[in-house]
Amino acid sequence: MGLAIPGFVNAHSHTFQRALRGRSEGEDFWGWRDAMFAEAARITPERVRDEYAATYREMRTAGYVAVGEFHYLGPAEARAALAAGGEAGVQVVVLYTAYARGGLLRFRQESVTAFLREVEALRSEGASVGLAPHSVRACPPEWLAEIGRYASEEDLVLHVHADEQPREIEECLAEHGVRPIELLARCGCLGPRTTIVHATHASEAELDLLADAGARVCVCPTTEASLGDGFVPVAELCARDLGVCIGSDSNVRIDPLEELRELEGIGRRQQGRRNVISTSALLCFGSDEGCAALGLDGVADVEIDLAHPSLRGVDEADVFHALVFGCSGDVFAGAGTAQ
Image 1 (tube, rainbow, N blue to C red):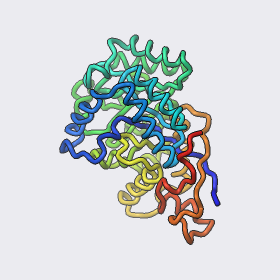
Image 2 (spheres, one colour; image 1 turned 90 degrees about the vertical axis):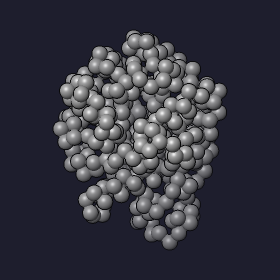
Image 3 (cartoon, helix red, strand yellow; image 1 turned 120 degrees about the vertical axis):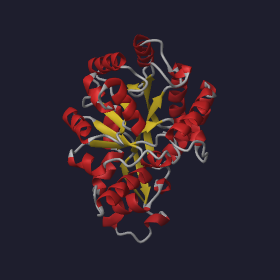
Image 4 (cartoon, rainbow, N blue to C red; image 1 turned 135 degrees about the vertical axis):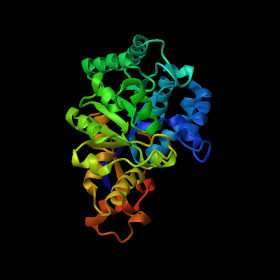
């Protein structure tokens, strides 16, 4: 016996980072990043096709039916990711990443014009594509302004990492005199199709900018815990009625219910009370808000296995509460079948 609900949307994934799960390199985010760079240097289109297909199948089994692939490994690898999604039965939106400086050479484009040419080539082939200036570390203001203009003119979603780490904020203040989200606002990158990834250390003023622009935040609690990023400001997001979606990010864990449960758990620990975010709102974060973040009109359903041991003895009226707070992704019946 099953119950169909809208499938979950993984709005932020670096799928190649799945290979780093269980490894402990680096005492902090910046040390871990060195290990991530080493892994990224080894990636080929063939590895993307094989390893992403396997990971996307894991996502599908766990209830994710669409994924935003925040991709900075190159255009051939982007095409391989799209093929892997088709093989696994997961809808892939390539969040094609602009990288002007820093990182590895393979991440970078020679100019913002070259970046947009790569985006247009993917779009001309029918790919679902969003724009993703990696961060204010990787993209200078003139790149951000041009990407923001193009996203607005072409009605494309725009995703960007911001306020994940205190050092990132300190460096932005030193270079530009403002915080990351303030710089994004100055450069025309905030709007209703903008998603800020993390916002872990966003200030009240920055969150006000997001609310005024109608932007949303993608939270990635299992990765933010793994990397020691900090705690997303749950009460502040809720007070501003900001749209929130979820992502598996580094893919140390692949389970939308765990992401939602941890988000609510952070809010409870911060405020010292229960029921900070309603169950219906959490499920909306997991599906509807993810669709909006990726520019999707809708996604396939998944089926809850009501006979699953995790739901044994649960009253019908409590199924959704038990789903979020007592189940893992294996509660979805037949979710691993490619469509």
